[in-house]
Length: 337
Image (cartoon, rainbow, N blue to C red; front, side, top):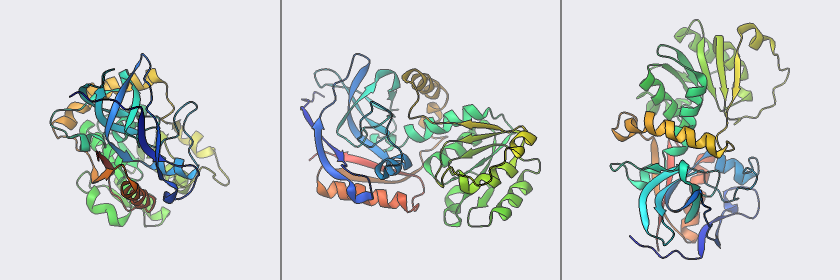
């Protein structure tokens, strides 16, 4: 389908840091792709935790990257004349809350024919993040791991990767979200309990300690991480939801257990690194999402038009994530006027 590309696009704008209400309707010049990029007409994106932090001024985009929020997309790759070439999805360093975005060609992933563009808007960020961390953990069949925020999109993706590869996944989540997680694992630790009780439960599941911990929490779970890991365990740190300042930090437990502390981010990685990860993911994991063995953990799909009412819907979704009430992906499906 041929589409005339306008010179101006609409996007979600913010001119100050703060709560969800700082988000406004804005306009800007459509990005011009370089020789290594394609222009994408965005159909859908998702609300991610990083969007909340950036909006608050706590997680700035990498140098040279747009300030427009949005770390993933699904939509159409366009040629130079505006013709739709194919349905694609992928990760972004920013720019997903917009009508158009320029994306490195090697980062584009073909959307399987049986997956809608709405659903595809909730795949890339969580599964590429989870797959990267899984690779860093070097987990093998029969190993075990502890997953914090297991009811989040990344958490549910990680649990499903564990099941796919034969790894025992222990999920940490609040009591109100347990029912959702039970479809993936019977090993669940209730975050509402004391740290001591949680550690005791983990030790009942894995007396020798877990092989890896996937940690997006940081400070609050520091002691639980150290006591839950077994000898030569891997601590995969990919977020700091409760902060990174730890009083009386003691390196002795890390040395005593030979714990590997591995810090992982995806947003600021090089284009080549992301291209290689995308290629590996497309070959290794995507076929199982396509055939339904691995599911897309969707909480909701909200249809949004490019007007004030649409911005208000996005504000409500930001509030929902900020209150930690979602269980899975909050997808935004952009509708044309």
